[in-house]
Image (cartoon, rainbow, N blue to C red; front, side, top):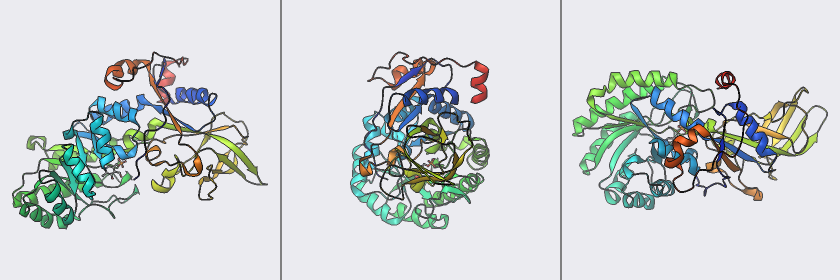
Length: 428
Ligand code: PLP
């Protein structure tokens, strides 16, 4: 996936509201939309902190190594670093970003089973030793360029239903594991663990149980070759949209870990969540630039599209549904929403019911934090949406020094009328 340079980011806003409820987000989007005509993201920093804490509560044995590819916004990365996360990097550029941010190399896994040689050399230069592999050519490359690597064998275990299946590209079939382990041993390489990725946006949670059992078998096969493995990496796949729960996946994971890797064995368990941490924290707002009406349908043209934030429609198979920023009393009519470029591929959604809108109306798109801005381009000269990070005063106090050591945190600048507490709780 191509790497973007840091996004254009507005100053961090600190709001006085006790919680960052959807209603507060709505007020903020409303406020920003009066100050700009460009598409923008509202980045709810509180949401990331909440997600991280929920992760630790539901999966207490699993240390998250955030998948940087999912969303590489610097403040998101800094917040996760401050919270103590590790990081899954897929390339030289991602390793560079994280090590320059001060993340210790042992908190990074180079989780790309097929690494370009120059990226591998860079990882070694930065002392990033933990890395995945799933084939024999990678073993030869590692033996030459990174003989001290701590290798993690990625096996293939696929969910029956996932938004983005990954098994067709990566992961050794478990039956190939004994051969790869013997090869690694013959080359004097240090294999330390097993990983898998069940598919991104996994919708079949029992797969985690199957995958952990499959990993257990590989641990046992490795022992026969002389390896004492000490690391299990559960990959990603965890849902991230607002309201999605970790409970079901956590249920399967926690019980399978107890069965196959009891704590007494001392195996370190990590995972590489991407969308779980990032999806719900970003809300995109786009402005209608033009309208074409027909008898029974309407086309709306907005200022971000599939070459920008909505690349997630092509690459992440996301179905995006807008809502108008202003509540409209009128009935919805089937609308097609188009992006701003001259390409007819640049279609965001079709047949969505929207009230009559005029140019300069705003559409709001929730759950736009995963695989959106990290892969967005500027085709036809349309800029990437600006990011407006926002945090509540209470949490800004807590993370002030840890997260923004270089850029001092502003004092609360935006007054949001606090909602009654009961309403905030209900809306969350
Ligand atoms: N780890 C690896 C190796 C991946 O390829 C990906 C996504 O492609 C992730 C983690 C993150 O997955 P998710 O966003 O489903 O959590």
